[in-house]
Length: 493
Image (cartoon, rainbow, N blue to C red; front, side, top):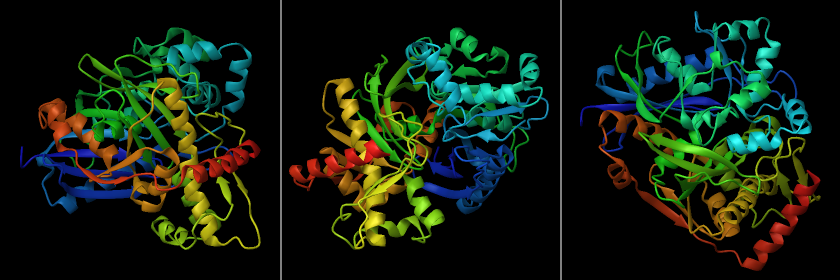
């Protein structure tokens, strides 16, 4: 397979990255194409599905160009995607009937509150492993069906197709031949029975979602279809791997053993732990999802997610204009020894796990006349880490055991100052891999396993490499004092 490559599509919240990966994990080609965010009103976040599709096409073209290989050398395609983001499209034309509603969108908060008031919260939690929150796809889909003219009768008639971004991309890549999702993405819709791994009839009834609009649920590593009339790709390339971005990162980190965990620092921050073939129900505000399924073997995960991590740094850049790039935050933050008593609760889209407070708003506290740009930048980085501390505490309580180590990845994992502060707070070792683009790597592994690029999981495990470890350096008494200040700030958010 030395002259064959895997094409990994990482379709994220702010852009699409495509990697061309060799059997030896050497990245032969790479390209990232950003696309606009759409904010129709406060709390609403949308994407133009056509812009997403174009970003994928451009990224594939440019990645192939940078790799200087022929598209015929692509052995297979893997897809990983922003989860929960909801698309509804016309089966005849492939065109969306409305902008995609992004996972960060809060427009269905009132609907979720009404469902709770009607006594449905326990049903949703038990069946899906999730919580009733506008984060997930189910209420977004119901909103589209109720709001877009003629959407509901057309959906009932089988004329419209729903999917998360993975479904939409497979449909487009295969020329409309495959309307599928993988079990990891399906488990994030608020529509799937977690144990049966099928769409839940009671949930569909409560949300008034017709089964005719839903994709088939498949495994995470199998051939879903073949390319047909898509961009610069030749027809016939198997599309053979799919997983939601956070599950793909867990797979790309080779967290194959029960108890192994990772945290991805992207637009949000997502901490997942492998719980094996049995779902672990959380009593502490965490989510239970499917990690992946290969053949008949399924892996479940326990997850804590924060809505805003890297997005807070983007806000410093684009909203406040106090930094020019995310890359300079480490240098700026290092200008001061600490945040000078400043705390930033980055609840710019509500608070996720373990709080689940959609009404929460961002808060900066502790400002004085001596507060500088460096203090604010450092408080932003520390706010990302503080959120993860709350998640880890909840996770260890649910699992009834401490975590020994945490693998880290994503763009902000390259920030040594943030990683050291995170290790200080958590009191566990942070392990950074040699390849930090583990989300795309996970998609590549899943796709390659399905067609024989890698023969089995041990071969994937053997290819993973560690780059650096971070251990606690801050005195425990100081950690506790800082946590007291953080918890007070969260209460006010």
